[in-house]
Length: 302
Length: 291
Image (cartoon, rainbow over all chains, first blue to last red):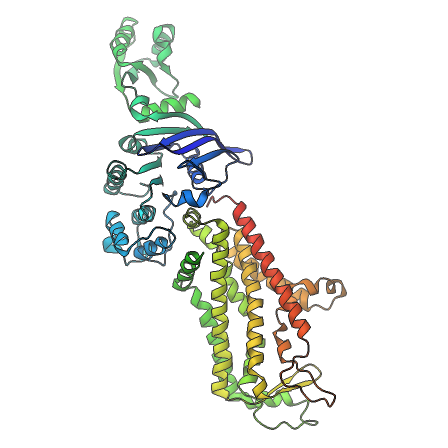
């Protein structure tokens, strides 16, 4: 079942096209990673999903309802944190949860509030005012507010910002738990690629407001396609040799170094080819990570 | 809507800034009451100096009712500035803090949020006015006692019997609530435009000062617009203390000299409230929440 359906959505701020003709779908139970550099349009898209920003064109449906015309009904089933965890400095963690529980039509009991405090690890600081909290603690409380009403869809914009390694790991585990154990759909945005790689089942890569790729992470990171980084004694000569031969189709455009996207079974052939051509090989390093895939896509576009 | 109002009221009354206005009003009233208690007779003699030759006044001129009138004359000009401190921060303060994103992604429309916030700010304004009334009227009545209210107007005097005074204060405070709610709504309008707290607060205060000056200037050019300015009408609570007289020039108990003026003022203030709030709703609905 499609939980989020974005159809050809654009958002322009004057001449700036922050999001340009974006379409994608998120299915129930997915952990959907929303990837992009700073300024790629991730937060603008998330704000449009939450009806904080009005799209210039296109339509957004969540749970089969238009966010524009069924806003309140849709938002009842969404929990979200958007960028920084901005909260009221003069209120305590428990007061925040108590206050926000009143804004939901679902009955949220005191024990649910205490459970949420435990879930985000703030039970010992529940009485303390938020002004005494670290950024990581505020982030946890923001997540607590998002989870408080047990929503079906959770939208987290850069949820690990400001967290220490233990905090990042806890949030990652929490997101995976929510999806696997509780059947929630999670849309999580980040510019930290390794984080998304560990959490998400599906990803969408956004660049300069446009979609570059989306789909299941296993499909996009095809094990048959390796990213190979070649180090030689003379890169200019090596480049000429590659461009003149059959491996030129695999060459990636990068500002520095020689990179190829190549099926793994062809790597020994490439190695042999370069040696036969008299290239002084120092190192041939092959990888297959989201970071490489992301850099490959975005550098091609640049 | 009820949930939003209780949410907003909780925040208002948990914020230290809220109590600045209550403290400032209490401090001002107590200082003035203390001064008049200690040296009130000299003040009364000064007030009466021009009529002492033609009129003999028996009884306690400097009573709680007169003290309250003096206090209201002084304070109802300044209280709007204290109201602006909260009202002008209601939306822009959230934008500045970043919490507007949280609020506007809850299952309530922006219209509901703006109206809920306006109602909460209005409740704060009314509570502030009740606090003012308690200190200025009831504490003054307790400290100075009660008697007939003797008022010196520009070219005549008004004497209102003490059993005819209290309801006039109730009317004056109800009228003042309309005047202060106009300021609240103006603060709201300013608040919907900006994304920081200081701008709308200063903007609201500046607008009040600007229009008050226009309202008081006796320049024919401005006379055309004066009747439409909210500041022209904000001080008309005083009309409750002008009384009708019969053919023998005796005061008619329970009467008001110019009821129509009060009605017109209430209407102009109400129209301003509706216009300011409606514009704030329109602006808030249209804008993208970027901060």
